[in-house]
Length: 593
Image (tube, rainbow, N blue to C red; front, side, top):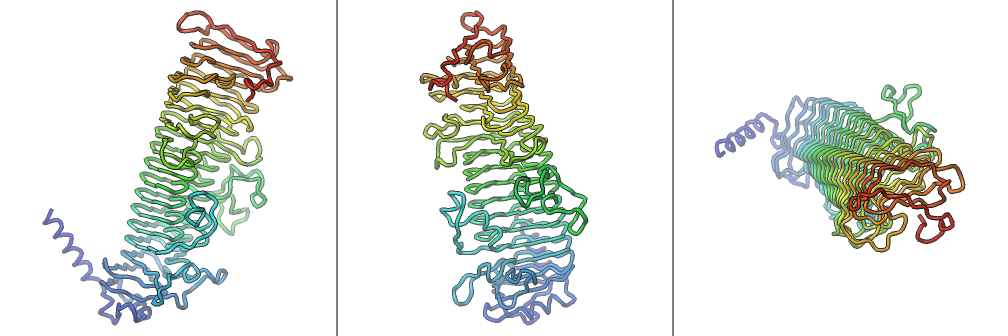
């Protein structure tokens, strides 16, 4: 090991010996003399590698030519002089520090100092972008440090962020470290940021790797807009709003600025300036978010209108929204992640999202920390009034996950201590082969849904109190509940009709099949109610279930079109007969939904 360490030191010395030492070219590095002109002269010379030894370099804007490597020694500091920084003519307030002027640039070890000689810390009005590139390729930024000491406050929408003084808008209004447009083959690694907007923001870029970076008190590590090919992996964050976010347009097409009926449309073949191009349908492509860690943020990874997304092997703790979220994406895999205590849900799929595989995840809601973090397991949600083909989650398969709740002191999540998968406005969802510990599944009654299949899951509920394992109630819903094992190992407290292990409200035009389930420990095993009591007959098939409790229908027998056969009590081995509760009891408190 000693020989290897010595060899690495010798290689570093040899590398730096080949580089141009800026102090050999008249650069002072004393923190008082403005070295901008002297350093720029070195960069404009024939040098291809420039080395900054230990020192404090007072520097304004630099333009880095192509085929250039710049290395800062461990104690070399880039002290920002904000005088006469270049800016975008269309946005005069967007001042930029370093301008990338060509391909094949490496920036290694840049360490920014934001304090002025008067003791004031520079903010976004002094410099908005530290490194700016347009149309360059083969860029590497490594071991950069951008650590600000103060965080300017502004209103926040999330409780956590409001307490700390910033919100998601912080990303747009505050300092960006690296801003790239129309670039490709980018690598950003082993950097550290604090109290800035984001480490990297891209627009219309391609082939970007962001890895092994650290961030605190910032809006994001990676913002990936209208781009293709992101690998975001092995990053660490604390108190960061969104560690990784991608944006290909808004999937909520009931907004005025979004074209109607475009929630599921992206156009990868069109670029800005092409006929028919619209920024809300530009899309993002090929996103991989793997093996990252985040705590005390809003969301570890989320994005909108991407195609081909993988979120795998990540760990998120105490998120103020969802740990992992997909909005209007297609071809999505969310696998082998850990979420502990997310405020809304561990995993979310919002608006139109299609072809989603959620598998092998561990989603836990523990009875620790602030109550606001004790949210759902999964939420499949749609917030807009879109057409039938542009709303909700479709072709989704949720399998092989472990969902655990230990909550004992907070309700307000479906009026039960157990946590749930909530389905809203889905088109086609299958939930199969999962394990629930104090958990349940619900289709939201205020939403529209298509087909939901719930099969081969195991529910083990051990928290005392009332509540179902499966509740299906949505307009237009067709449900299949088959071969699930549902156990209750704790006492019930005067369970209501709706607290049955399986509780279903059937739409007259759809059928409900409840078949082959094992239900043990519920006094009310299966309860059924017509979605519209005064309308058509509701259709049920309830057969071959092994149940410890009753099968109850709320209403008169002629209100139901049903087939029930082979339902047995495991203790008596006798058939369980359906019991009808008179329609006059619809409004009784016991039967209210």
